[in-house]
Image (cartoon, rainbow, N blue to C red; front, side, top):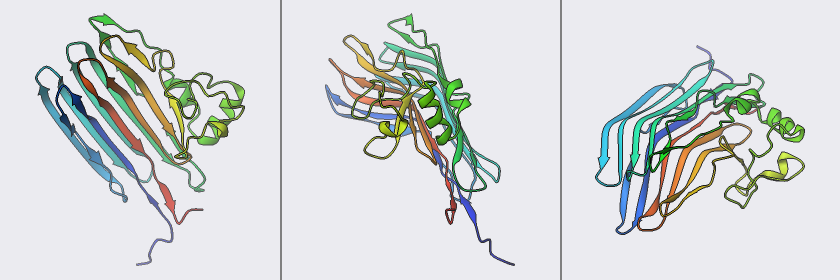
Length: 246
């Protein structure tokens, strides 16, 4: 049997939620429903039901699934009935990344289509969200996103390096690259960095973009005031690369 001279190394992982509180007392919130894909592909899943920390966080159900074959890599994280301190509630949250390798080994095609937040309420009041998922679905490659940025199709969606949410003002997307080598974007430009008085700042749909991979954190909560800490809900990444690279 002859050995393959070239193969695709898969990369996908996800988790439902996790984080920590620093005050009034320190509390580590164990990361739940973690799944990671083998470099050779395959399938993996993990879930948790009826998770609860009294007075802090409850989640009715959460599931992460990763799978990869010769055609594509798919990563899905779903959460239902999230309740954070009886202030923030989400009826349903989905992180979904589908990646397809370019046979020529140049770029990876990645789309966040299917990612969503439904039924987000704060202090019982529904928060209306406008999603930019369709825009990022329209431009699945890094080169396509670079072109879209120059044409103005990503206006307000790409974040200025060194800031927590200010839109990038560089003429080309290359000027928006962060010190760690990726470009940070948001799926919810109108709600990203939402400040909730006496509670927290919410960062929604944080999307990190590189030429060969994406990472999406659907909701990050930076708690302040009486209770301080940080929680991430709905997080996942994909894809991989060809070996040897082209």
